[in-house]
Length: 462
Image 1: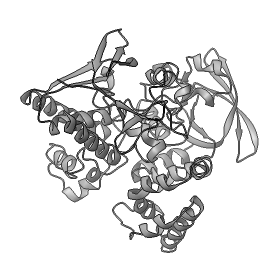
Image 2 (image 1 turned 30 degrees about the vertical axis):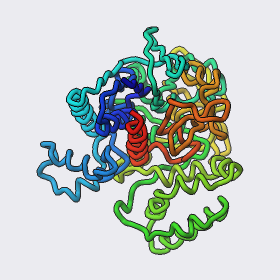
Image 3 (image 1 turned 90 degrees about the vertical axis):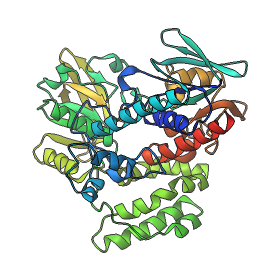
Image 4 (image 1 turned 45 degrees about the vertical axis):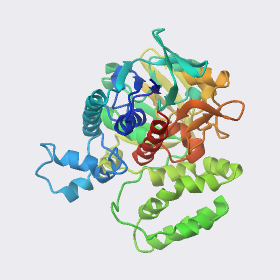
């Protein structure tokens, strides 16, 4: 009996496991390994702050690419939503905790289906310490030294913690007033502090952290510091479709030409008083194809010059969440600076921070209760010596893509590429680890399609 091990029980891992069980016709063994606290929901859909909302409307959040209304239909069957008009619910940005309940229910149904099909489905609460070849299989060693052997291994372990490189002094990483993990439950000492909190980073994770701080009773000012200081944008034209201009996009042969095409269409909608959002949404179905056509030099230019602008345009907030943030700024409870950290000193009750403020051109000194790192997950495996994939990288079982955004892999078969440049038989990855190959590879839309495709390939070989 074939044994498939999935490392990671967040959305990507669970979606793959569900597809394997649904598509499987003959018995096999399926193990899903993930820490218990985030099993099924992952970090994204835990109920640690009830005000956190999905950043995509309900109509686009089905786990199944061939059943686009699956999540919406499930929501309409819930008591709190049964009496509401479905078209409005479809366009709503619903609580992430609700989506977590959706995933939990699907997982329970999957376990029941697996039992009926004689598929051995085993969740293991824990973390993988190492993965090594064993004959034509793989041996996984867990944190408690337990071991298991699998024929196929799927790496779906999600995002790593943010890098500590943002700190001018590496020693501060050991301070109790520094939070490298922005998704952890906030310490009570921070929530009750009489000093501001400094957040490094200005993206969606910053927004989540601000909302969590306020919901959990933090009353002091919050300062967000990032290199550019770009403000987050709201969804203003949800459901407004821009005409397809893919022929122009796909005809571009360089990043410069591509940017010129996009700017032309943005100018057209802005002349009508409409933001760029519908244009960006029209690009979305083609981003992976466009990324593949760019040269390595153009990809490097994109990361250096356009990445942050794209992030602001692409990752938007529900309108009322954006309004809440703007009100916090107007009230002086949230301040967003463009600049960087210069120096950090630990004190008995917090940190003393020196930073540059690009707007004023001056240095500032702040006494803060804590620094929370919201700069985004570290993608360079060389900077993660305690991660099981660092061991795999060192031993040549996997390699990184040329941009070190993830793992080098065949984005059609999902086979990872080993140090000899050849696909590593039996070892697969999907989701965020394919960012170097596909760029857009972290949203539900991409993850659910990858999960279905990978599962179909493996089921054919069972």
